[in-house]
Length: 616
Image (cartoon, rainbow, N blue to C red):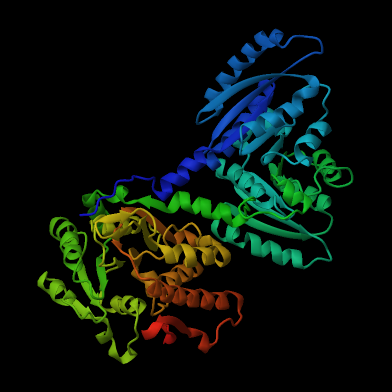
């Protein structure tokens, strides 16, 4: 039997590990500043599931030795430790640095760069040193190319003297477009989420630029539809500063991006001065890190700049909340209780075509655990697509009903493909919840079934669950740790990221293990061929929203490799589905009937090549 030696992190574990590397740097020079900065730092750290580094900044007068500040540093550290215990939910690392007055700003910059920080958080209320004005601080950190994203805070008097951050429940996000929009959204949403508050989006368009409204809607529509704390969207035309000041009365915190013009004279700083003097609310300015190559217009190499879009926050939030592990549902008796409490029935459909090698073990394993020992499943049914081996006989001998999908609903005709079998199986399966798993699994375990059923039993708003797993390929007695899911990586994932980015967080969108609610599935069209899984995901997203979809880690699935010509046909069918849904989304025509024929390259006798045209 093949043995897998390498134990890599699962995709969800790897994502979590990378998030832990995210560091927020918070320079602090006084306890008053710390009381304002630390709660916001905690919010931002938790949004990224990262860690906080508090940089205690002390200065020494000209001619004085840095060692003379040791007593002051010790006292400040003691006070910060006390505030950390009071204000920070996680852990924080405290580092102390002493600068000469003229070195402070550059020193913080270089420290942040050396730490490879993910974010720099600076305060406006207290000055790091008297010689540096508020304007100097803002200009330095927001108008230069920062080594990482920068968040700058001007707390209101209400925040300082009142309830603190707990009292901030109404957040206004000013959207000016550009690369800072997503960072602004992340910060604004995290603040609103902290206190179960409300977030209003404000987009100010130029009076003579109607295209700006269209761009805004295209960029932020996924966020508006999927982020429940966004309760209002305002689109206004006119002068940016005047509109923001007029609308700022409705909020307790205003979050804005510092545009590409930075805070230079007559651009961002003029606007910033107007807002700081014209509104009493807490003001938070953010600036995304801009690569020097991007700023100078030089050619970029692939992978040099990470582009963050508003939809990225939607996908991150979905991934964190709707990604499960099969181990969470291993208590089968608890699942049975949930099933009975909700008065649900559950059916398992097994699509098959010439799977005599594995179908018997799949049925036996699942039937023993989920029917005989714990009656979680009400029925198991084999949906055969015309097997020419003994697949149907094996299933019948094990006591489960067998159907040939071409014989189901004969009045509707018959088509070739897995999607046809799944759609017709809805007619013979009677459960309120329907699960399907492939019958070619070589390492079958009941978790392949209870894993995809569990979220449906536990979370009422979830309508559809996809399984994911590591997919080593069996090559004789050896297992290749990588190589599974080639159609996913080369076709489905790039297309999803390009055209349906809300679905980009699905680890294995084409997996053959999934489950759904009958009420949702019966409303969905089923593509007849290999593109059925792709079509279901897009249509469920369109009908029920991203939060109706979940995914569950099923650990590992071993199967045999598919030959390349088969993968070409699968990819071709999936691309047809994607094009079809793009037509619907954009109300345009991309395909004509002739596009559905595919030429495969064949190698005949005497080393001659020829074309075989097939309909897919």
